[in-house]
Length: 578
Ligand code: AMP
Image (cartoon, rainbow, N blue to C red; front, side, top):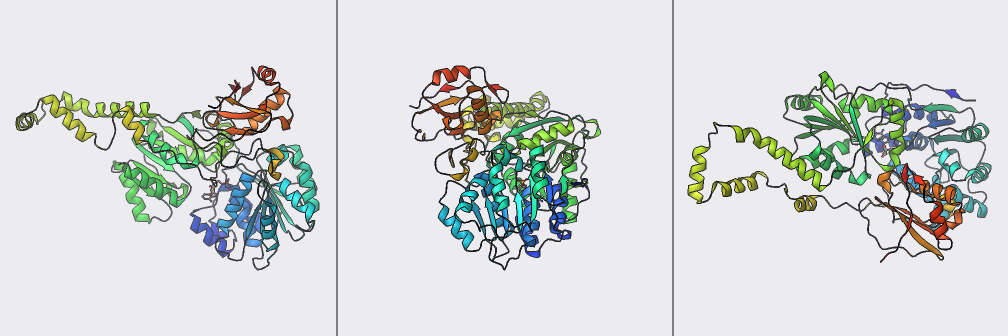
């Protein structure tokens, strides 16, 4: 049925893919330097009008892989619905809609509407009636709209099923069929899915026409023996995480990889402000300046370079002890390529990787393809940071203390006399001077750590699809916008409980790799409850709360006594707020 297209390593720039000039201008504005592998493969196929199956997970750049060519193909002057993107959750629908809006920023006549549960239907319908060309919807809510207005999708020419496997897992199969039937047969259909089980192939067989298949490389990659570690972090906590890790990692020179030009500048500026010798390297930087940066990294005038993959191409500096994957690479091949820049010339190398909750799957793919575990590390706390600072200061002072020929003996005598103080007083004053700007007490380090910023609604990494199930129609249900997983901010006003429910707590949270759907699955399977019996699920950094029926709670908790989630004991307990 399908034709496999092998991954092609050669990278053609965005402007050779036939995209609309307005779309190209928008790409430049968002700072993408080159297409990711999934984009390189998908864009020409979609531009040529093919149906397509893309096997790709979050983090590969899949959204742009379909949004860019589809926006290039629509008739921007026709004010009617032309594109429908179906996404499993409201959160993803909003993200996709936002991505479409940013890629259509230079197309003033193009409008995008997001259709999802939990928000009034009126304005959504109005936006469609007003001629929004792009509809991004969750299936349940879209079916509600269809039941009132069967002709809603009659002008659709492009259909995208995003995260199709997730939609099926959430039970949207019937809704999908209803939606397919409400659409013209003459259309281009693109399906993206992280996995391709038989159910997805079935849909493709029935509803796609001679689809081309695209996937990211999954050839086994050989990785040099590099010490690899990852840290789970929310996107808006990355700078904080980088600053903390740099304090405790013993590095000589480091290259940090990010995805956009802007990120190279922002992160380099944040590090420079903390006194690091750092430079940004991106595709906008002139060749002679680039060479200067590389020379400086080689001879130690610089210790850190923050680069995009494009700008780092061919960069070979034996001094590099650390590769820091600040943004996730697009595929395992690129990961292996990036980390291969350390551990040169027989030296020890270390590779660090920041993973946002939505990118967890990408980490698994990297581990599978490289056949190596990337160990998890935790964010260094104030105590660890303080120890590292003291260690560094000690290392710095040790040779000076042993230096018998210290030329400052006379100066010491002069200063103690002049200041009328003991050598100890003077030592304390000098310590205060050398440690200026950096705390050397636990309290001080704690105070220095930036307050964790609240996470905005539009953050791309919110892992909150789980547990919502078919509640995308809105109304009751696990409609928990704005109340979960805000990194580090654990205290919030409790929400009103549903009737007959009590709140239970587990010590498992985001940091343990737990998502709402894992909790839901475990409780459904092992507790023998119906879906309706489980209320709101809130996943926080270091714990989670689940609403369960008060009736029969004790027996339920005892059934769940030995349940494990994400490999760890669930240990669910009744939670009493005071
Ligand atoms: P996705 O896999 O669609 O969720 O995209 C993951 C992230 O990669 C998003 O933050 C995108 O903005 C970013 N991204 C996608 N394509 C590119 C590209 N070609 N260059 C830089 N960043 C990109």
